[in-house]
Length: 123
Length: 461
Image (tube, rainbow over all chains, first blue to last red; front, side, top):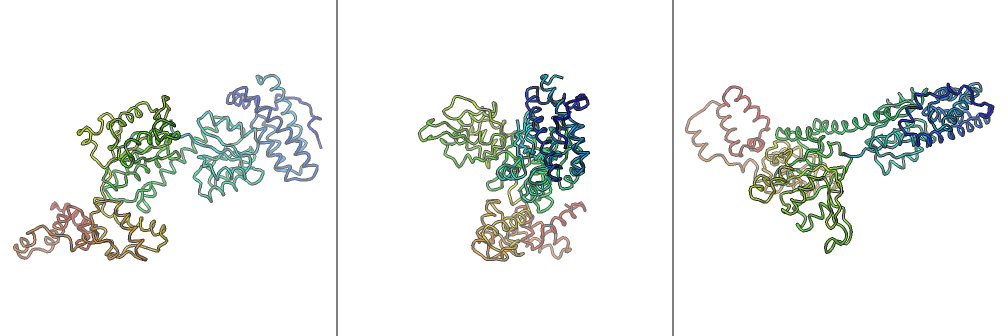
């Protein structure tokens, strides 16, 4: 099992779709964007932990369900690569390589989003 | 401003649910959130949203399960599916189940708003279409039964005017269905989900009418023991129907005029004016122009109310609608009273057609209710009808005095001339009422229409 903390943010610029983020910031306003993106970051981190725990228990249905939720929350906040990787795990919840790839890309996306929020969501 | 559309967002991830709420509320929509299918079902027991924005993947059921549940209950709401990339096939399947559209995450506020607005528009059009289909099916239009030529202009005006906010003045004799017509206008309008509030100005004592329409505050007058909202504010976002509007006294007419000009309501005993968004429909069985001339109806108010004039024909001019309405009422009353009436015998139908119905639809309803309550069925026979209805049967129709001796004095005539004379004499004797004349002659009204048309085509009409 791969834990998120083992994958520090690298190549963060590829993790987030700038167009999606900019549009979302305009639609919501900066204050609400920062608030909801922070909640999305927390939700994604918790969901990944649930997914990995379910995988350790061999509960593929729970893995697929967590992957679906990850795809939803990250996709809406511009983490398109993470959304695709989550979709792959939802389709093959028993595949450890897909799960590892997902953990890596989710961690990078979360780190990138966290950096963006720390810098006031302007970047 | 029109009725504020309502949306139920069913999304199990709270962050996303709040994001979608933030997308929709600035577009003037009222948004409620449910975080599971079970919560959505509970909400739908008390809330009827215009649109469901539905995530397909819920923790306790699928979005398609929820859609089927909604459909089984016949809830009139459109569904927009939200899905992630990779789940598009499921979204397409959901459209086969009746979803209006689907959108794939991530999407912008504009994308969601446009999709939901399109769903709202489809819902409105579906309501109009259902009303139009009714008229082709059982002869009803938005709850109004009848497909006679006399009703065609009424339906045309209803269709054209309903989507606007124009004030409508409905005229017609007592019992012609003016409130039903106002209700049809409301049902076909964009305010259909808002309230429809009807006030009969003739049925409320004049000194109470102002507070009934505009409300009052506690202590405004003796007996005002609590605040009252009033019909106008209760109809906010919907339609206010003022029946027998000519009965309103001149003082209240001035206040009504101010209301129509400012679209604000000042409750009795209150200084503050409140905005009030209502569509006004009014009605009277009097001639409003005559009331204006007599000084009982303010001219300026009349012109404000009479933006669109709609005249409901009396039942005696609606030909076979008498039978359509009679059958409709019989089925309804029979079900209400637990009886098993299935229809009318031909002699009963002839009697219904021959009678002039001075009390119009209300009188017809009362006659049928009386028949259902006093008899057991399964068919309504002529002898179950009250004497005044039977008195108009064929034997009761008199011919123009002196007509028959003159015809006989002319000697033997071609049969076609005799038929024509007989039909024309019957039509004259029945005051131009073709169904009554047909009933008196023992033929279908269509027989007379066909003959009249034939003579016109031959240039003999």
